[in-house]
Image (cartoon, rainbow, N blue to C red; front, side):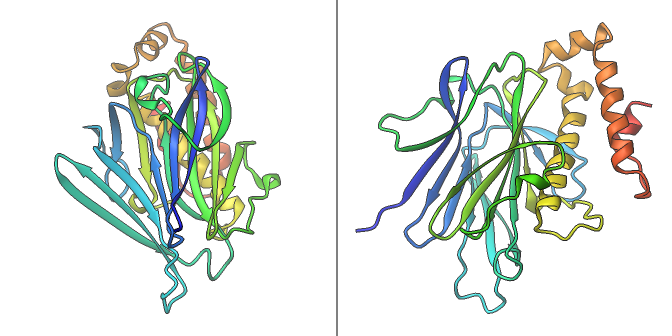
Length: 279
């Protein structure tokens, strides 16, 4: 009898392996992705993504990428299911990136909380694991974006925008690819989860589903995460940031980010919220 196939993506935090993403391939070919979250998190509301609220940790939050073999429109359905306080919510979006354009479909973006916490321990009798290395959560945190493609469609690393790292795993029906990087902020109890179904992303002139678009999406969400991390309401959860702000250490970093954003968006007819925040 066929069984589900499970893979854990891990990282060593302070010398111990921790899980940050669980991927399960069902026997019918569907792929379930469960990003591990912290005690609290920021959920980005539907719409513009400008409203951010601190919420209690979800009791359950998972994405399911469906093979959708019976679809007459040659699309795949991606569904997000969350449960908090006994209430179940679902959000759905569809994509033609896999079946019609042999491209990539983005699923979600995550800023990890402190992965050294016990809730991220590996389970006993763990099966397949994929490690992305190690880090010290008192100095940095991990950011990653998950996307899916056809099994034979690998990400061309030569098309990365800022040299992000890439790791992938091939299942029977899908290839799961993560773009990830470290960010120079210490972690805390909070994490940030941005579901693709919640946000509109400027597409510029890049076709959706290509490596260039995926890399730009990763940069876009990373800059958005920086505005959250550097906002005054977030500083209370990270004393290091508040201390750095009082001593003026944060200003040069903000200025550097603002300069980079201005260069990337030159000629696009709008300014970045981060640039506005630092002027």
